[in-house]
Image (cartoon, rainbow, N blue to C red):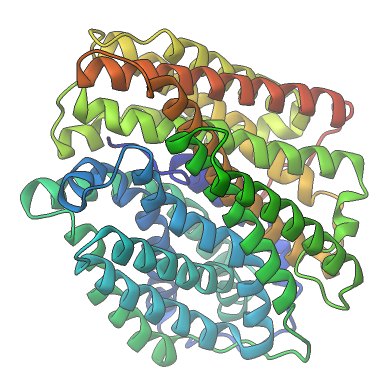
Length: 499
């Protein structure tokens, strides 16, 4: 199918908003000499291209999923790992990636991340079997985790305070959303005109060009003394991976499967260990004190739960658009542009609404629309066309995401001091990716359970299982709505971002 991947539109729109909200995180870095004054456009182009590459990759593979499934023999449930392998590594290592940049220097870390991303894209494009592709996708996620946190800091240190920096931040903030749309269309074009492999291989020349340009145009940030919280990163990522594996295993083998039960047990032990490590670590990658504020804790839960239902819905919509509606990869990519268009239109008005109404009304309205979209998709039939079956729910998704995510980000960062801003924004992005990954694994489990003994044509079986997954997505959105209603207090107004 062709929609934003488990991280796609939502993760991208929210990342665009988060980058604007979290500019204060980067501004807390010690000042460094600005980048080459004569070439500010080149500096911005290099940094934004690195960030755009990560954003595009979050959606470009979605459109190619049916072709990947046919070529490499994935099952419908196993196919979700093409997305999960990337988002798990990205989300699980994002906090550690930000810490690496603090200690080694942002430009050096960005260069390493871009080269790892390009090299793993080459491996993925040449993959001869499913295991090879999944390993390459996990390496891509690790490269993205080194790349994304460094880009905003490099803009701050390469552009002096004032109009130049504001312009650079504006371009940067819109990049993630542009990447989501571009990834869908580009993925459809490459898959239709060449092969799904080029959706990965296209990163190779771009990554090499960025890596060569970085030392020429971009000024390095100061390095800071400190330690890596390697134990926290490893236990957190391993625990989440074990949990996702257990859900996927259940979708294939049922709840009595021994490996699934072992996966759940291992996940519980690892995640408890992660919490204990973070509570005692001198420099934790996830400071638990960030959850002490009730509003921030509620917003973090919202950031985790909102993509959990939405990204899974994107996955099944991708399959339905090509396997049931018989759209070509390119047409499937274009089918999701209305959602992206209304999302960005909505986002443009949110800062003013945020200042006037406060965060809570926007969050509740957005989550209500997302729950409504899930209910609408729950009633989808195999004979429904694009206009009757998909367009309306996609428009609700776009408006709902546009209304809810930016206020959630603003609530998380509103009362964070400069010393904690980087950790708070890094945790925000990590929870978005992890929420989407966990949500996809849950919805795939619902799909597998619903279709295990279902008879009918392939289109009927796919639609039957997908509608059950859409119903679960609606319940997750409803849970997020109730969490926000109970945990986030009042209608406290937050100043419009960017003035």
